[in-house]
Image 1 (cartoon, rainbow, N blue to C red):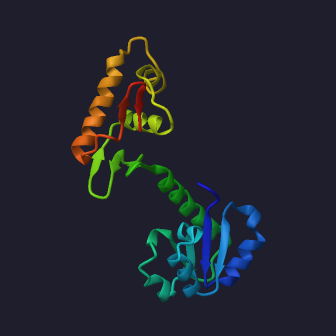
Image 2 (image 1 turned 120 degrees about the vertical axis):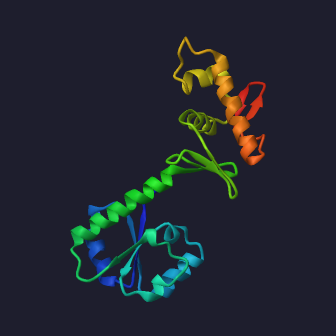
Image 3 (image 1 turned 45 degrees about the vertical axis):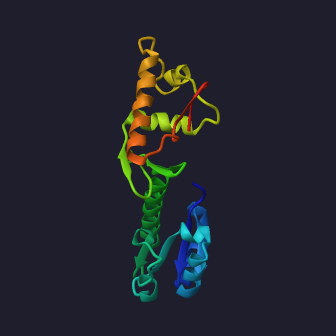
Length: 197
């Protein structure tokens, strides 16, 4: 995740204070003098604004009534507020956001959630084992098919006791689960040179 963004809506004084001490934190700051400008940027898919944490006053009813705003991205404050408390709040929000961002990966037409160990599309969801997640993540990073021997050494950290059919059995079961749940036989392809996503 790149440097995060914090949008300050209708609290220009707070923006000015944060700009003065910006060396204390590692996020970009946007200042919006009015809520309409902020919502306009959001509605026009300004990605930095879309992904930002939003700070505004508790009585900003126009912002609170907007369906485009997720309450998980919103810090509402009453004046006055201690700057160290606000920075703590911002940092907690950013950590949560980073955690959520890192927990979900888009792979083909699916979202793989590393926290819940699930793979899902718009209609269905499937629980995965830790080893199945490891296989998917390993194959996702590779541009070429991966042999059973490579999977054995990289995903299973190779053990002389591990037989190649163990790897093949895991992948067979994973492919079958995905086929049964999503009717997709092409998520993990079995090619002459090995397996690929």
